[in-house]
Length: 231
Image (cartoon, rainbow, N blue to C red; front, side, top):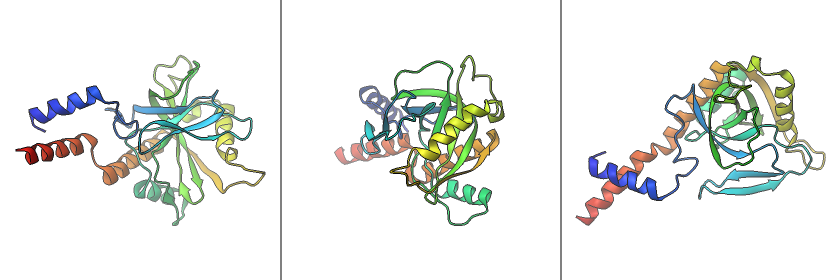
């Protein structure tokens, strides 16, 4: 990107809010230290999610039952669960039919301190994850700890997390879609450690790059073409 386009790119960033999925970086030190965009906090009785088109937080649905999300929950920017993530899930489960859910990679962030709002960026350290399959689609849940958290911040492995904390998170994901007593086909086949979590993150980042490219480069290309047309 030449100097003029770089300046124009920076000017646009200063004027407009970045899209949470495409405009926020995954993190310069990924997969060891990553950004999480938080959509839901434990006190929310409504399930919120980012509208993929606009980037605004939207209401997905009210929580039907009394169980709330037990931790900070959102997604990892610039990730996408498609062929690479699905292939890894098939490899680890011995299946062949699993496909990606074509959503950003989900993440649960553990924090000792109460966070009283969503729609924020949290820098966090991945320590493991749940291999969740939802209706035949890979729907991994990365487990991470908030960077510098006084209780969870020193944890380097999912084995360091109290079992009851993990059980609570698992229970939520296995039950929150239940409607009128009819369970959806949701299963958690494995609880995996930090190395597998990092592999899922790297694969989801590759899936994103393969499907969407680099946001800065795409903007630079569009600006360059626009300038050429005006000359």
